[in-house]
Amino acid sequence: MKRVLFILGVFVAVCHAKAQSYNVCNEDGTVLEIPAGENKEITFNAEQRLVKFHNIGNLTHSFATDKVVCIATESPANGTQLTYSTDFDVEFDRNEADVYDEVVETIITDEMDDESEDFLENYSSQPVKVTITFSENSVTCVPSIVNGVTFTTTDKTHLKIDATVGKMRYLVKGGCKNGSLKIYSTKKFQIMLAGLELTNPTGPAINIQSGKTVYFSIGNNTTNSLCDGSTYSAPTIVAGIEEDQKGTLFSEGQLIFSGTGTLNVKSLSGHAICSDDYIRIRSGNINITEAAKDGFHTNDIFRVGRMENSSPKISINASGDGIDCGKGEVLIEAGSLNINSIGEGIKASYNPAEEAKPDPLITPNVTVKGGYLSINTTGEKSSAIKAIGSFTQEGGVIHAEVEGNGSKILNCDKTVTISGGRTTGIAHGSAHIIADTDTTYAGGIKCIGDITIKESSVAIKCTGEGAKAINGDGNVTIESGEVTLLSIAPNHQTSTDSKKSRAITCIDLVQNNGTLLMKAYDKAISATSITLNNGTMHAISSNDTKPVNQEVNQKSGWYLSKGEE
Image 1: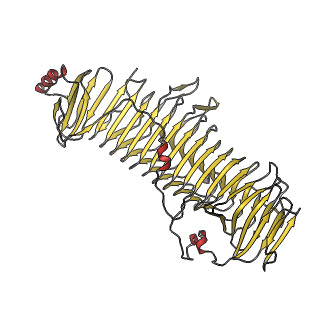
Image 2: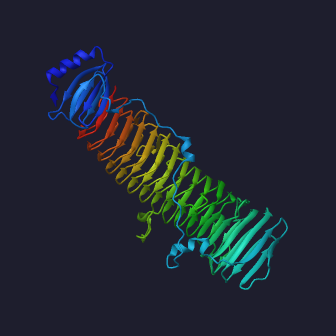
Image 3: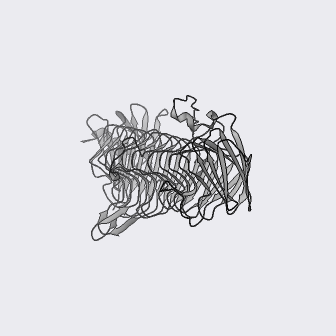
């Protein structure tokens, strides 16, 4: 660094007594306002691209957007004012719950495309309709005789259907506290709930033993409720194999939800809604009021989108995971999801390292393209979103709050790419200690691969000891957008372990544009290299005189650092 020219030094000294602030004026019209009261040293680099103000309170301003042309007490009228703050916080903006972008689905009509089977619109326009009515003492089917379909009743209120024909639509209504519906079918079919209250004290309320697509329609202007029992009877054995009965609503095949009515599901023993294939929600109001295990559990894809005129509303209260996708990916394109879980909020859990023969076609990713996600988890070491693969956000709003020790907002084994939308996360937990050699710390974003943020808003706050707002084993790149990171609790120290509370830990940190605000108890940044190509970077430490562990390679933009003892 080269000390400022003597004539400029005299100008600054004269103005010091009068000015409340300095204005560093750039050739491109941008202006940085800096309080004058405590400045003790001003330096330029040789090209006049970088000016640094150092004050006695360990506060450093660096301005390098363009060639600095003057330092004055008044800003040019056409200047773009750059402001700064050492006092910022993270909180949820509840208004975002009502304003978010969504992706409207495109109905696939090409039968050569497997996805075309997801759309009820492509199903038979003239299905054979059977009306099933439950009461406390009986269940009736009208018509009771259908070619290719057999109806069998056990104990008056437990109905089994065997079907070998297609174009079937079962409209189900009524109420029964000791009944069930089991369906076997070799063809895809539709179930429409039309005001049903069904409880099975000894197993699933609806058990679909068919690997075919089920169009599960929630009748417009109807309220429907399903509940299982706290204990299940022994499963049926077919060809020497026990049938699955994993939750209140179970299906061996795909479950495709639509309709604008309401479905309330309660599970006292298993999952609330479970498919051994995949689940797709196109519309409907689905409330999982209680789940002994997972709210939604699927072996394949879990997808939430929206029809042209209707968007889903989903509420989940689960003792296990909110959404667990065992062998596929989670895709959220639209809708409102409110998840309260003890386990993970959303999880894509397939881990090829645990498989004897890993399937390379399975991608355990989580992708958010639109919608509103409110996630709260309370369990130890639980994450709001857990992806064994990669996490991608292209739009929508995420509000996530985790409370258990060792918990994370986002826990990802591969890469994180946030290129749209808004994400706000608050982690309250501290260290989860099993033994002195097994300690997991709560935090914001934990990623084994690289993290990229652009054209989005990301705000993370960690209140537990030893937490990190972003903890990356790879590189972190801020392309643009607004990023706010706080890790404000003291470091965590035991006899055998020490973890620092930091805003960012990674290999290389590169900021190309945008705003990056960081505040930590320890160093705000711990990285192998730190590069500021443009934009605004604030690094503040409340317990360290040097808020970053490396000299910032500042090529443009402006940088503020503040350290305290």
